[in-house]
Amino acid sequence: MRYFAPRQNRFNGLWHFTVQEESGISAYGPCADGCPGHKTPQGALEHFAGSLLDKRKQLIRDGNFRPCMICGGTTNQRVRIGRKELSLCQEHQDTKTLLRFFDFESLMRDEMRGQDENKKDSGLLILPP
Image (cartoon, rainbow, N blue to C red; front, side, top):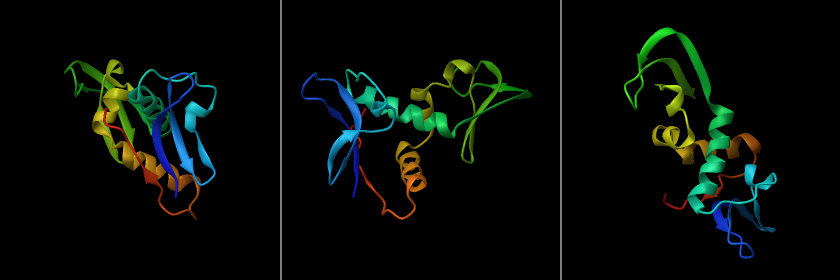
């Protein structure tokens, strides 16, 4: 079983999103690709969540203007992840806003299933924001 969570580096005090497997603990996702680290566990979680959202989100623009779900401003932009679609202006398409509407644990489970269909569901540890 694999466990995923932000963990603090004991040498520099910075946080990375990590995976714990039988072989040990290592940085995972974008934190494994030369990331210098984050000041908080929430920063590490948002970094990883942002990479998941970027992989899955579709940005849609058309001639239909609607109010942004956050600020009420007029926008012709929508964000779609899976079957869910939100009317959001460009300012409100950031990771923090999207995580209010899309379940991170579901995105994570989809990510794990996509990597290896033969592995059992991984454990997922998430520190509260």
